Length: 151
Image 1 (spheres, rainbow, N blue to C red):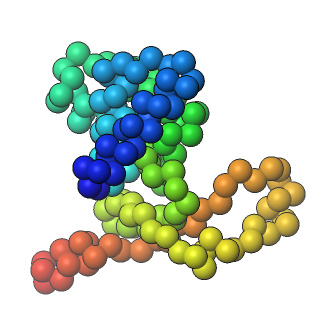
Image 2 (cartoon, one colour):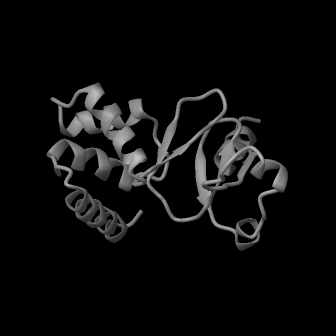
């Protein structure tokens, strides 16, 4: 993630907070900045540990509440992995995820072909569809390389 991208996301965050009448606190900024600069889709505990290095007084509760607020306001999205904690994705542009079945890494990718997939009517019968993403599962190249080196 380039510094320009992080700055762009952070500026948009500040504008959004001001439009919504939300306070732009130092703690909120640090939590958002941590997410905006990450590409690994950290969970709440990971965000807490990273931000706490810079802001030792931050509480776990503040991190969890802020992440919940950011999600409800559409500034971050949840990236769910079966059997794992919720992870947070600062990339709100349309995209999909590759999930490594060995290490749990999540990587963003885009695909025009997948974006054009239509949600089946049988799924629409469940209720109102808000979004659709594809998860591709496999073994990431780092894990493949690690296994090859250990032979």
